[in-house]
Image (cartoon, rainbow, N blue to C red; front, side, top):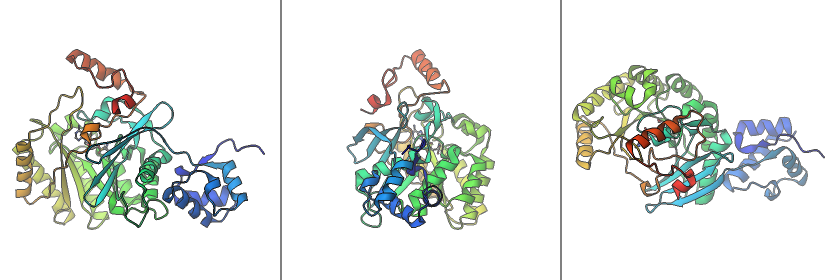
Length: 392
Ligand code: SAH
């Protein structure tokens, strides 16, 4: 028998795609697809021969036409605070990072959507790595698979993995189809069974894609705002020059109206003397109050304050605790919900904005960044190493 030239990686398919593959390619009943999903996502079995409730003939057919290819764990590191980071090999050359963050009563997995990132936000370490490519659906789902297997996650029992945030490396809305398909597996009972609200997509503000997301998926939306006005946001998030704040906020209003009663989270990374002044807080309150009014819902806007996490070569600094508290107090006094995200996993460089992976850069940005470091006399961690060594 000749082997099929291309084997379908089943991790690339959501329930609908897998049903179609079973019906059209294998000539099998759809419910067989459901059995296979449970084997893969609930029991973490990848060898068809171990899927014992499938007949021998079907197992042979699957062997010939399909595979379950999961990412290779290149490095696996627990942090002192219970955070856990994986460096996952994607294609022999590139690697990305996935981080698990346990907290009272919940466990959040921070998932990457691209190898590197093309957006070039000035305060994010992923940006310094340049960009290589989008991750496939299989590579995104594979991150959840890897963590769930490690955690022994069993849907509907005492689960350790309760939330997924698309806040790892990359801009998820720039890889729309693969991310939406992967999030559908995360929310499927035959997949990871997460509630819609517990899957969050975070974007730097790709306005047209926010509208598409509103139509095609039911997940929570987080927006990386970081500045209350265009002059400042243009500097921090260059994408703002294409989609300025007014357009971004309008898209968020449309999203919230469509998902009646859902709030939108605005992430605000606090950087010393850059965006942490009382005037910024007051401007932020005005902006988000206007959002609440447009959505006609109290607390429609939630703020997540993230103290800046430093990385080698960055020009930004984290504000001191008093400044962070003062900023938060101004928001609270205006009646806004604004928790400060606790820094987790920074001892293993797993905190927000510290993910680097191993990116074969196709933008030459990495070279530019190394040059700036050299002129400043800073040696980047892992400069002559791989990301694996960096994570070690
Ligand atoms: N591209 C998407 C997904 C990445 S999310 C987005 O921009 O939303 C990563 C989150 O961590 C974003 O809110 C980002 O702004 C924040 N972040 C990036 N670098 C950081 C740093 N050095 N310290 C703290 N937070 C950072």
